[in-house]
Image (cartoon, rainbow, N blue to C red; front, side, top):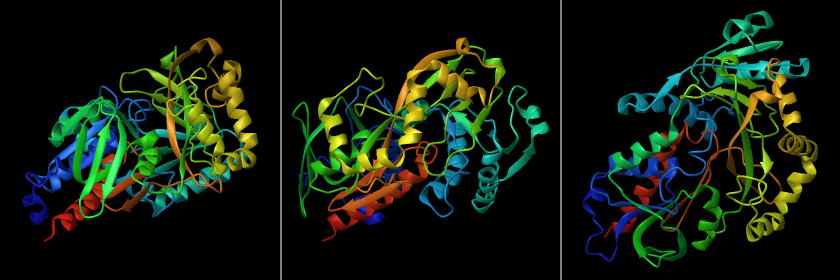
Length: 413
């Protein structure tokens, strides 16, 4: 990368070499990876919020995922397994709160047992050690949890991803501009990309990286690229457990393989509190953290996307159940009691929700892997929901590698 390092944008009409749009953990990890791989590369990050990690990064369960769920060979499997170990090391190096707690995945019905056994096989294929437990062994790990069988995954943990994002921003040495919402992109072959923000500032770069999360498809369209998908936002609602002593660590149900959602789970966070969730219900805005948040333009675009209707037709029964649990605390509590019989409705205290940026194809397919695409002078990260926080360091290196290859090509005589 010596050629990239010496090819400064100074004096060439560019404000930076690489411009990253999005100050969540993936965008900041990309900036960090670029400056470490090619010191001297000028990187600028644009984030529309007043600080980093305000959306998906800062509104999740805080779990360091082991990689047990993901299809062997997929980017999710490879990057989660690698990323979990790297995230623990990163947190230890910089003094960021974290803990490797392990977790239980619990089958509560006989119909779930084949899926649980399939997870054991998948874990082995992904190189993840797991321990199979019978019903009598579950209370050894979680005295209040009941089930027919379970697996214990020892490499799962928790951390403070907002603190990770802040450290990445600091350690990258990149210029971070907050309150800088991208409104227009002008891309010209051989010249690079010029981005105009809401305030009217113009930033010129040789290469742009789109890590805009909930808005990544909109940014792709601003460049003139057709991403071939649309972000359909799914809100995940959480409760805090008023009696955290009921749960020691992390407890998950057996997921339905038809969906990229892991189901309502119990997580003891790094602060010692226990949160329960998330469910998955359609959000009425890309940043729709409650039923009262409606943005007609965004909702109209979601409804106009043919994939949205195909999802609804295909999975209406699942969606109806999620909707019922969203609107009824009693129904939500009933679902939790499958894992934790001692919980009562009064134990659940409403907590802030998150929104998952889920890429959906026109045929209604929920994109089930990380999706990274390239175009002229541009790298687009178009699907990076969970476990992207866990996998953020490997994702950042891969996106950074692509951006640096483009930069090297751009400065070649």
